[in-house]
Image 1: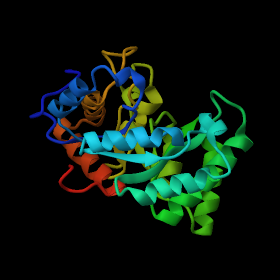
Image 2: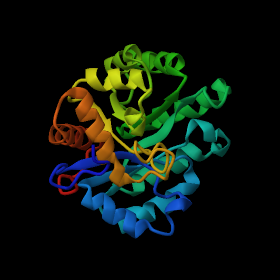
Image 3: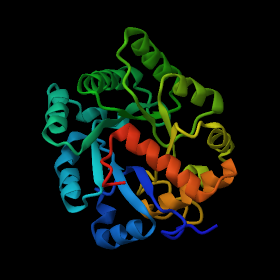
Image 4: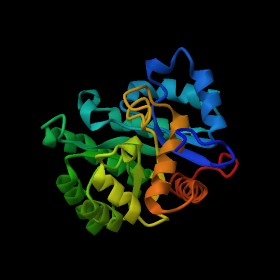
Length: 272
């Protein structure tokens, strides 16, 4: 399997979650952008981990017209949540039509145990997404139970935003629960890892109209580049592995995931 299929093999792809604002892209971002375009990546959705990133991400959107972005606070960055943070995020979202989501937000009980603090940061962001009618990008690691409890209560109350479970690593049973809430499932480079059997099962089972592909770069580079810096072009390797698992062509997966990303994030047709 080629790690970066040609443009002909992947006519249109969307990297639905990336972090090219990180410093390890400073030296060669122009070359990185050439590679994602050669790989058929027509649009990128840039995630945000804390408000101080927003001006730099906005500048990247100025530089690369195919880039759209989210604003939010990551569950492992709760120390950046201040009394005015919700207002800062709202102002940023209202000021720029290229803001297409709130996030990445969520819960992470793999690297932290401060669930109450994380919930206190998560809830106002979910409220903001509902108020602005924007989707959410959800980070959920070892926290499916409390996340489902929060979202199910919001669904009962009629205030559960649409969105995507990013970098999916849960079980098929958990996936079905999140799908039942109307969420999309996004597969990253972990789907190429040999031991990621639950993720493989999810990729086989997820409905064709409810999944995305992403890199989460610079993290989680797919095989055969595992352990190295990831970049948006490598989303083609993610899509190729998903195609293998589903018994489909790369073109079928590219078409489905591009359409799904465009629908979820309201990407303009000229971008995709």
